[in-house]
Image (cartoon, rainbow, N blue to C red; front, side):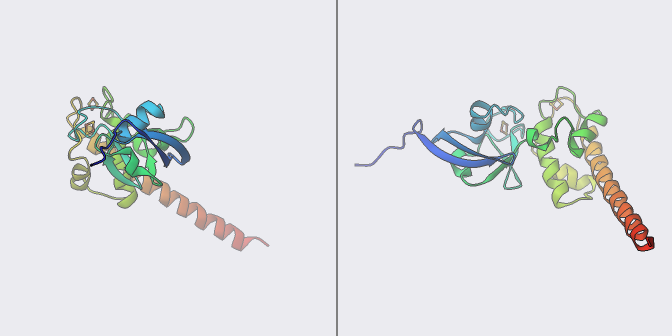
Amino acid sequence: MTAELDEDALVPLRVTVNGRAQALACGGGETLLTLLRERLGLTGAKRGCNQGLCGACTVLLDGQPVRACLTVAATCADRRVETAEGLLRGARLSPVQQALVDGGAVQCGFCTPGMTMALTALLRAEPRPDAARVREALSGHLCRCTGYVKIVEAALAAAEAQAQKGADGAAAGDADARAEGAAP
Ligand code: FES
Ligand code: FES
């Protein structure tokens, strides 16, 4: 006799979402997208095609972009999930989010959270990507509104802003060190 998998049976799941440890129960066949949107109320990840084609549901799993609509929630046990909500610092947008807004790269906004997560992962791994690398990171992310140009420009602007912030921080650190060295 073969035991049949009951996809509706709830299984316990411990997972860290946006830095917060969660002890949940999920269906055996439930996707990460359903878990996020319907159990945790995190609706940043969007349900577009629900088939892995549009990228709107992209989140980070242990820092890597994944399609939440194709990821079985139970496989996320003891792993780290990040969503667009987790990039906010209070009311402050992340550098990528801010650059997308400032660059006019958000129109209807449906694709934006998925694009944001893909770009966040890219800039963490490669702080100064060129336009070709940005396009590569966004391949498989569909946008019906923007024509992509502004999104790529915004990604490059975010990288530039990040580099500038790093340079300013380093310069401030040097100035502090000089001031400390000059103190009697
Ligand atoms: S909703 Fe997941 S890729 Fe489209
Ligand atoms: S801004 Fe509308 S789908 Fe991209």
